[in-house]
Length: 220
Length: 69
Image 1 (cartoon, rainbow over the protein chains, first blue to last red):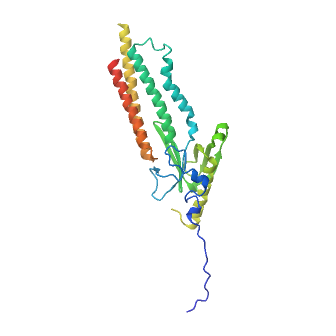
Image 2 (cartoon, chains in turn cyan, purple):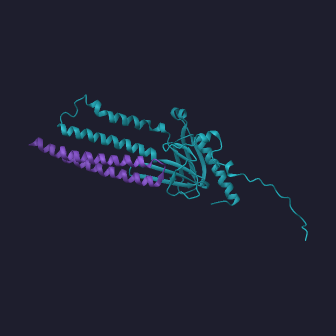
């Protein structure tokens, strides 16, 4: 039986993922931000980074830490602490103690200096912010005995605010990102992250992508 | 006699302090292991070495204090 009506074949152009934020870094600026350095504070589509609750098909879009310049304070204090015994050697502060006590006091001081340096470094190193194509993670390494991990789904993000102010922040281009979410963790903060405008833009693109996925029924 | 007693008390306090410090260093090793298990960024080996070196140094200072004080 002949067909009464045959619709024209619609030439629907399906946009490949590579056009979206989920593709590989699409412009030169972002490609430059793809770093392989494990101490990098901004990495777009990082390689070899894993976290405990990552799904097998989940992709890390951004890996962030505080800007390296924020470490300058504790680095200077650490250097001063390590140099203090050499400087104080010129002043007879511990001479009332026997030599063996003086030696242990200096070793004890170095222990305290190492603890301060290690704690400050670990605080920076492990306080990371991860943005995947599905979720946002805020890992806060508050101190050596307390850490906090918050997460929110991308589609739960209601509002993104990028704040940058002050001379140092403007010179080194870093600032804070505030995410207002509908999840239990109402507010997620990315503190002192590099390129806050880029981060906000990527988050906006991810939210649009998530909306598209919902409309197209591709929700994971 | 009083001088010796004060030094003995100082030694006891120093050893207690260093003992507590060893516990603190152990906590660092444990916390680093937990964090490394939480996030892998490709720098884990170096971080673990630092944490263990710190613990070994703390034990070394404790033993040194025990022997020379």
